[in-house]
Length: 120
Image (cartoon, rainbow, N blue to C red; front, side):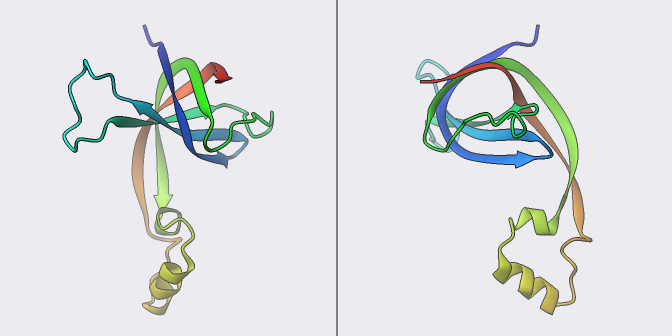
């Protein structure tokens, strides 16, 4: 069985290749083991396949409920992607003779693929 339900607050929204993603802050149930850093929230990535193209209206600050399934995927992240377009850092790298688009790392992530959702 692979089913997930969560509710929390949307902290960030972004689009990649027609899909919409959101980082959702989910309060940790006080009956569960605490996080080692003491943070009371877990931050979960939610993916709406085709969500950008379907104009899924998810916005930062909204409270949301999501049901779906867990998916893991591998991807390649360049140094330019990692610094999230920070021009100051990109210019410093280029001045040092480093091409941030040519340096990359293989990464993996686990996300919730949304099948049902609603804004609270």
